[in-house]
Structures are given as structure tokens and as C-alpha cells.
Image (tube, rainbow, N blue to C red; front, side, top):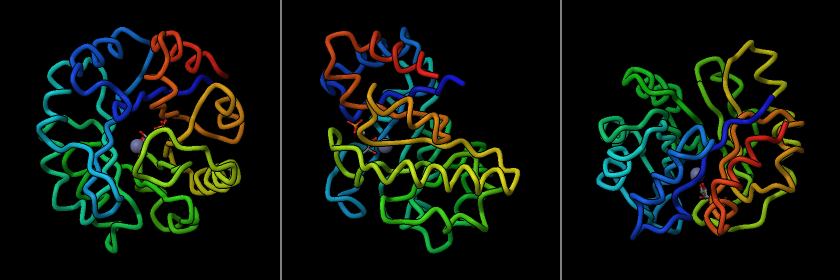
Length: 217
Ligand code: DX5
Ligand code: ZN
């Protein structure tokens, strides 16, 4: 099956966000991936609610909001109001992950849980039936343009088995260092959604790059 493609606007030209969103609208992308960083959970700061609202005003595709922040439960309402379709929080940031997932779902958003490269898939064993999306970080979160970590394939296979064993409908999203060279292997391992930042936005033909990723099966 063809993957869902979610270009990450972290790699886009922030001074021309309207133009970048228009490009995504006109492309074969399925979602717009929105990376929120707080300088605490990750060593970098990106943007917050006002920027997400501004993106929403121009976007014709769902906003896939990835919160790389501590205590994300303090802000999920605000991101829902800003226009998020899905809200993904980090397992490492949530001692009460089950409660926080229910909180996101009660707002009417799809609930995602992200795992850092060192976090085993097994932490999701008792919650996999409740989540709509699992985001596997294939780089350490905080920056775009990093090198893909090959152990990701093994994690996808573990997660695919966990999902199937529990009859869960969760989608598997891969985030970090995704490109044309690893896309097929990621799908073969069981991924459903591919995030791509630099690979899309550093190209002179971003729509073409998105179309080629979408065509991988
Ligand atoms: C990293 C972010 C990613 C990032 C991906 O912390 O979560 O979404 O934008 O960028 P690339 O595709 O350039 O690795
Ligand atoms: Zn992300």
C-alpha cells in the first residue's frame, strides 16, 4: 500500500510560509507535519500556537502536530483550538500517558504517541488499543536534516507485531531522515506514514519529491 506522506514544515522557509503551505496543498501530500519544540524536552525551540493557527488558515490538508515538549497535557487544548487534526505526544514526556491519550481523543483529535530512538516499543503494550498513531523517531528529536538510524527497521517490525497482536488500528509514522533510499524498506517493515522535512524542502522540485515518495509501494 502507498504511504501517507507528511511533509515537515520545520524545513520550510518560515518567511514564506503561505507559499510553502500552498505548495503542500497542491502536492500529493496527505498531511502537514508540524513540529513544536520547547527547548526543554529537546534542545531546540521551533514555534507555537500562533504559527500553527496561521498555517491552519492556509492549509487544505490535516495538520499532524508533533509536540516535542514537556508536560504536553498543558497545551493539547490550545493545539486543538489552533487547528490540529492529530496531536502526538512523547511517551518519555508523560508519566500519565494513558490519561493524556484520552484527553486528546476527548478533544476530537487523533491521538499519537511518539517514541525516541532509545525507547522500546514495549512501553506501548498496555495502550496500543487506545492510540490512533505511533510515531517512531528515526533520529533524535530536535533538529531536521539528521541521519536516519537503521535500528528503526527492527522497531517498526516489533510495533507492527504489537499492533496486529492487539487488533489495534494504529498507524505507524516514521519521522527523521526519511528519503527515497529508505522509503521502500520502511514500508516493507510495516510503516504507514512517512514524514519528510529536508528531503522535500531542499529540493528544487518539492512537489515532485512528494509525488515520488507517495508512489513508493
Ligand atoms: C525532528 C522532527 C522531524 C523533522 C524531520 O525532531 O520531529 O519532524 O522535521 O526532518 P528531516 O526529514 O529533515 O529529518
Ligand atoms: Zn516531527
